[in-house]
Amino acid sequence: MSFDVTSLTDVLVTRVEANEIIRQLEMLKESLYKSGDMGFNEALNSGVNNKLHQVIKDEIVNCQCNSDIGCINTLLQEIIDSVNSVKNIKLEVSEEPTGKMLDKFHKWIKERTGDVKILDIFVDRGIIGGARIIYEGKYYDGTLNKKWDQIWEEIRTEIFTKIR
Image 1 (cartoon, helix red, strand yellow):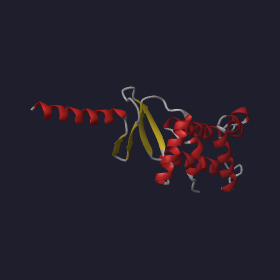
Image 2: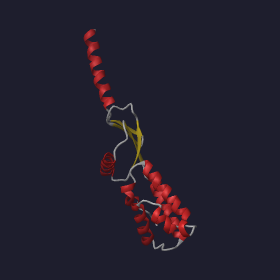
Image 3: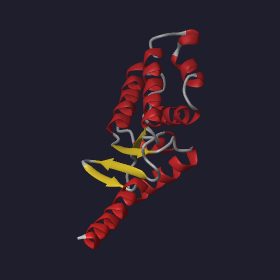
Image 4: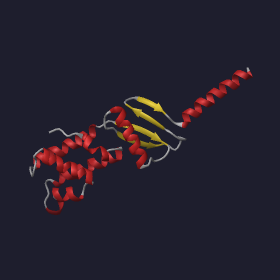
């Protein structure tokens, strides 16, 4: 078995969402060894989001797990491992981004990298506008603060040059 995490792209945008997906998968793993209202089928039907529910059902069919608890347990662990293996992009912004902004940024990243990435969002009220992006040791400052600092440095240099 090998799980392709791209099937979860719609629900795997931010670190918070990734953590919630992992929590739901762990809960499903625990439910494998319970019965009745606490059992796997009940947990799958009521304890996970709709997209994850469908992905798991499809994967159970694709892997021919049927009611094999060991097979389903292995599948759930593979999904957890796949979610954990997705690389993070740290995004520092001035305020909590809207869902529409997140979707747009997530799509932009996927188009440029060809890969699913998880946005690790940090709100920094000191940022005037724009964002800072940190990925694999690379840092990009696209904030208005940086622009302002650059403009101010140019003006300051010009003023000091004229004074001398």
